Length: 273
Ligand code: GDP
Ligand code: K
Ligand code: MG
Image (cartoon, rainbow, N blue to C red; front, side, top):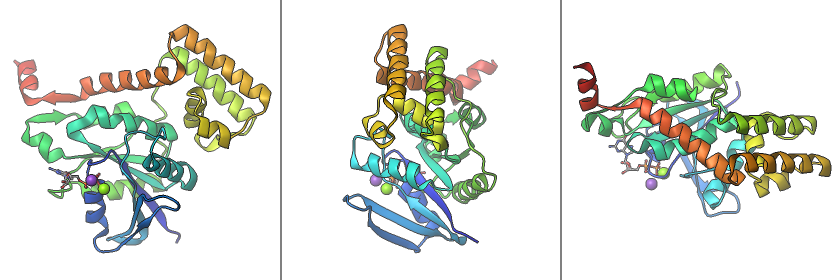
């Protein structure tokens, strides 16, 4: 049987290393990613040595503006882990979900570890994980790395997601005018056989005019021009530059979703009476 690779990814201080330590125990190898002074941590799953777990560097985005973002993005796109555990700090849900949406856009099978759930419970807050999972199209499991809640479940789910070859997040849709532009760009990329493994991700990156992606995936002049025309038309219609359009759409989606999902216990009592 071949190895299964599972990667932990998330914002700094969301609890990745705590979960990594809990699932790998002493079976860890520490080094650096090639060419950069970014720490690389890999380990074998305590319950199955064929499962290799990566503790990816903490990041807020896949832009990539920092060496950590470059490492994480290259790994996710280039090496393609079999499963991804997105470690989300539940006490900072809105900020953390900004990265989550980008991971969903890539389309790697993933599961969300809604970590620090002990703090949420202590603060008498409640996050409706069914609504969160439904809204994101991704399984969500509540975890606490310090209280050892949900950790093995999240690993099992990540391996299961891999086995079922489930690709999450096909359901997230932005403004219909942006979606029209993205689907036209997808068509052009498909014709030119660019980014076929991660079409939604690549269409968004081309829409953002991501220099690194455009350089690494060169298109014929005519195709590039067509894409540029689509971008300029959408910018005109929506009245913003393309990068801001994407940022705003992501934040709007997140704001609406968190309003649906996060309830304090006080609120829910008021609603009943
Ligand atoms: P990383 O930067 O994502 O690797 O995060 P760490 O694993 O280093 O955790 C950051 C801090 O949060 C540490 O002080 C941890 O002890 C703490 N921490 C991690 N997970 C939890 C959790 O589920 N609950 C609580 N209360 N603290 C946690
Ligand atoms: K840390
Ligand atoms: Mg860490």
